[in-house]
Length: 336
Ligand code: CUA
Figure 1 (cartoon, protein in one colour):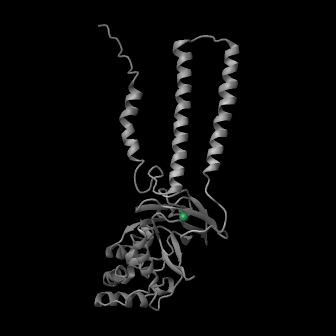
Figure 2 (cartoon, protein in one colour):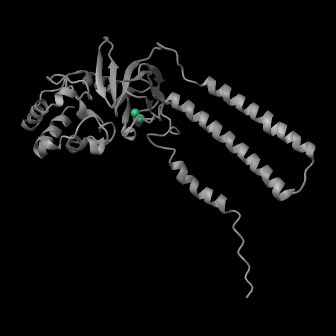
Figure 3 (tube, protein in one colour):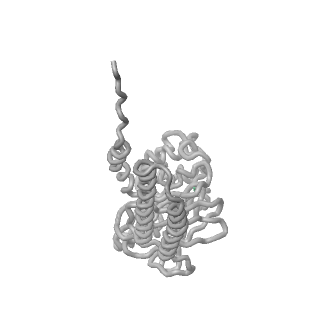
């Protein structure tokens, strides 16, 4: 019996691409996407990306069309003179023009790197292993320390001073702007201006050790009044626990060495090695964006810190046992 092999479907790649495109595009939205910008600086980056993507597509289509032409439409030898012009035009003139235009455009949208810029909110962030030490500069010249969370007023400028005390980290809030390295012994600046409210994700963008991928944070952009109330609350000392269960948590905290590394303003805990916990219960996540904010997360984290975040400075405190861990969880999550 005569068998004719079925011809390969010439349109298969095109069909697959059309089918896969929606899947790919869903990856463009979300709280950690440069293609879903929520601030002026991120909008510039997204615009640059789309120009480069569009230009790249045009060039790709042109090259594929030319290749198709010489393979399918006019195979065989071509006039050498025409070929030479193609090389000079397509290989030298065209890339020079395109790259020069891109360079000029790229330079024109480069962020301001001048020192001592003025901004509505001033925040210092230091990269730690593997979390973020955050200081908000208050109008009266004092500063308030918090950790692993940034809140910003919408439509206002925020100036970040970025540094590190250990290795190089990189501070990145994709929805709001570009990434900036945090280098020991140096302070880099980043100016951001969010344009819409919402909760966004930030991450460390420079490999900094075992738990680099667990070095995250949340960013909440709020209306000015809500922001002012939040910051005023963060600047106050912690409330004295009213309930018996939370009082027991404070006692466990003070008698098991937690206060050597952590501060809780308004108590005798004034350690400086680990994150400030004065209002830890008000944060959007625990352990630098790793766990959801709930009492059970504290129990889990304190008992298994190094299982959750390998190499973490804080040792596991499994030895405390379930009752003490639960009391700690109740107390710490009450610190709103
Ligand atoms: Cu810090 Cu990677």
